[in-house]
Image 1 (cartoon, rainbow, N blue to C red):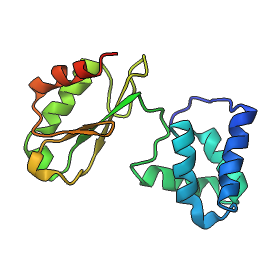
Image 2 (image 1 turned 90 degrees about the horizontal axis):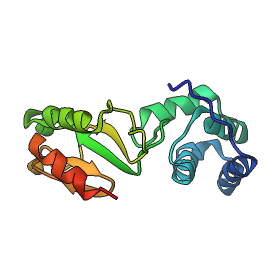
Image 3 (image 1 turned 180 degrees about the vertical axis):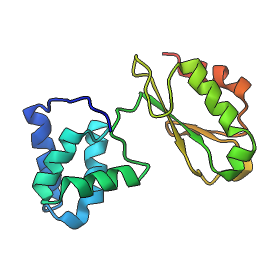
Length: 161
């Protein structure tokens, strides 16, 4: 877990409370609440989890467990263009690790990090269900199949703003 502390603004706390209230502060809606809150803030730092914990009367440990269990949730801000490299069996066997290494080299970041400019973040996921296109990379909502390390530079250029 990141040790970076953030200070939530009053309006941010109010927004989290509003989201919790929209689910009647029901602890059974924890995953839905976290999903909506992450949609609002982009990630779920400890300070955001604390507000949800207080509102839903759910332990911080339970919230942390949910956030770290589901790969959709993140405690680290994602880049404007989140990159996910599939490392499921089919993708791994067909060279996903070499593609991942090329992204790390080109972006100069490790898995779980974002570039200093906030443009890209890099994660791995287990399976996107496109095994016939292995190895597969997702950037935002776009899926790239049959990736090779040589494709990485070209694809990153598509996202040059």
